[in-house]
Amino acid sequence: MPVGKKALDGLSNRLGGVLQAQGQLEAARVAFEEGLAIIIRRLAEQDSSNAAWQQTLAWSLNRVGGMLQAQGKLEAARAAFEEDLAISRQLVEQDPSNAGWQEALGGALRRVGEVLQAQGELEPARAAFEEGLTIVRRLVDQDPSNANWRRDLATTLARFA
Image (cartoon, rainbow, N blue to C red):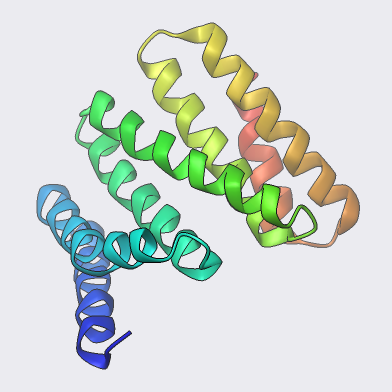
């Protein structure tokens, strides 16, 4: 990737993060989407076998979906999260032993579940949460000392409370 494009993508993600922290959700969403459109999606489409680009695309979709969800734009958030979920599933299929991709898949399932729950689609939401819970439990069993995975487990379990 040319340095200029990489730098531009990094700047739009950093800018989006700052704007998000300031509560400027619409401006943050635009910054994240700009980075997504300019670099990541184009690269991921050019070489769908490049796992790093696919992972970055999934992560970016998750960020955009989060902004949309925070703004109450649930249909658009759901579309972003479902695309993230599809990419995350493909990555796990390519390398089921990759714990980072398993973690991302569990997070994508949780985000899809959250939107489905907010839209009143409780049965599909429950199914997404249960699938995510299975993944996170497996990760915690592999490494009980991993604080991030234990937090993910607690967050997912809270959805059933």
